[in-house]
Image (tube, rainbow, N blue to C red; front, side, top):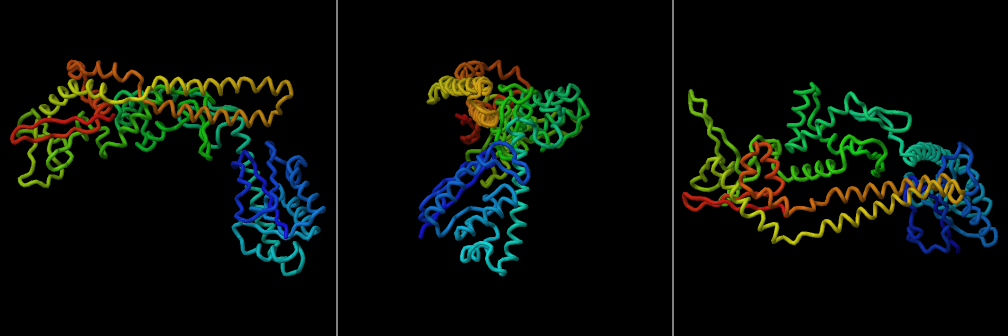
Length: 454
């Protein structure tokens, strides 16, 4: 008993399926790939189904008992084509087994009887053809979207704030792009999302939700890239509002803020969310105390959930801040010198070389099309693949730490550097280096232990 299988896939919509996916012992697998152009309704190129024609010729020479397919709609690009293929199978006496169809109850009958034979199959076949029609309509829509991706056209919908839609791409909107640019600069300066949102409302009367601000920070469009629903990213499709370096810093700040306790990323005090009591392991929060009828305000750090008896006492904020500065100036250079950091410069050169190599291949494609070596559809598909690979490499490049970490450590180890900063600026730099600060009590005295992020 000879069992064969047939696969049909569109490289624009899915990765090429494995020929050994069946779990059965198959005598031969026939596999066709779709062409890159969207087929007209009711028509399809014979080139697309070369392996199907080979299947029919082989079955005429040596009949097969069963044909395995994943879904019925893979037999053709229209309902008419699927019907013709079912008729061809019936003429050869081949029984059909469908392995991945949603309405699988239809197909045991089709597997047990010759295709289209017997009135008891009419209702099932009508249901089958309706399902195929819906699947083919969905495929045509997805193929249309895939063609737009190949041409790097913007996805459907309204252009993001700061851009407007032209014929084939996004263009910077000069009236709203400065607002977005200022939002990013404010976030990069202070590392506070809610602070940047309040800044927009105050300066431009542009009120957005914090969640909207987060979408702005992570939206590839502002970096000059396009993201599609399939999760793939195409790089350098239009003019960016922020540079690659700024985008990398935004990503680092967002990763850092995710590690902090809630509502401390935008807290006004630089030590908020960093200090923890060594005795009770409770986070310490900044508390303000003021005397009646006096303008002066006192700041303390106290545990939020102390379990000790008696409770661990509060300590003056300024005293902890001063000792934190002393400790970071003394401990940071030694910690950077001791840590075994990867050679970031070499890694960046390697990734940069890979990006340059792919850009060189992109530059070679238009002459190949002009000379007739490549057809336009193949060139478009290759261009799309290269640009998505470049976007992945750029993402890896953005995740790397700064190359000159030791030089930065020497600069920030000067006490005057910290004293000249405002609290929001000091908060930004503390969180660039410090993961947590442990307050260790020694009777009435205390000391600090800094744990760095590397």
